[in-house]
Length: 490
Image (cartoon, rainbow, N blue to C red; front, side, top):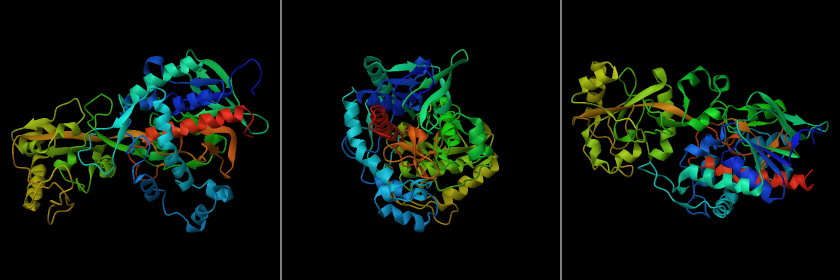
């Protein structure tokens, strides 16, 4: 333990979203005393979880979606070295250290995630959270989704009282600054600062980092994502509290990095709105243009839940990091299209394309030319709005692969769209037990991680898995931390 006279508990949990809540409750159920540190004030506790609908890639509370592990495998990393990845066929304990520490989504961690997902939801159900198949803003869907009834806020409001009843102490408005190690290299606590600039040292037998990514830290965003990070903003208020101290502190200790540090989960949102997650998923039914009034992507290459992230990245790459969805009265043929627009701001509307261009401050002649070229490339066919219909343009670059109908029915409308940063992908490499690995592939004694701190995503986000990842690895980390406190782990 840390020097006498400091506040201490068996397990210190950093972060108060679903990952930290699951870790604290699991550790307490394992017989450990627990202190949870939360940067936000009590009224805003819960991190990103508080503001999300918490969609889950599950077909029931017991089963993950059929494509769950396949989607992770398809986005496991870059051009991976087969001379290293061949060891993944061996038992995990026999993997060389260089493979355990390799920056990729290793199949053992993904398999543990999939196996524990159902039991974790059932465990949460025992703590007052109910789940059901969810209605999503995706009008075309590639996999089923479930969600907690009441969204992430319901999870936060259910679990904090459970922690209080179990005797877990919570320090609000307290930020971890660094990890503490003993002479043997074991992590035995944290250094933090509480409100009023009060220095605080919390000692423990283990520490669980569950304090999110770094989407709220401009310096880390610029360092890892580049100067265009200036054009991003967190998707909801909770993301502003995620400033990356947990990841940075662990890296200083020699933790192995994992996840795509140069990328993030992109979501298309209306920049005019200040509500949480003002997403715009209706763009497949119109066209997208940039500030120059030109199209720059295929707006409908497939089902929107599987393609929106790549398209949102293309929006981010445009001048000013902004695009505009242009559509007309024909969108009324799309059932429930307003469900796919979560902004509290109305579309910009005009009786003509010229007037719309003026309202958007776009070059009118270019926009008119863009729409004319698009209209000319549309072909007759059957419009089927709730599934990819193959109604594609001909001879247009870039093409539009589905839902391609002329835009010629006033009023003409537009929605501005930017890329929001839901969470960053870069984080720490962990074992299936949520132990943080060092760069040699060995577990750092006493250090665990869960949620966005765990680097598992590369290139493309496996949709509706982030809240689930936090709950699953939070529960695992808490149980492992408690086991260590009982002396059952080295």
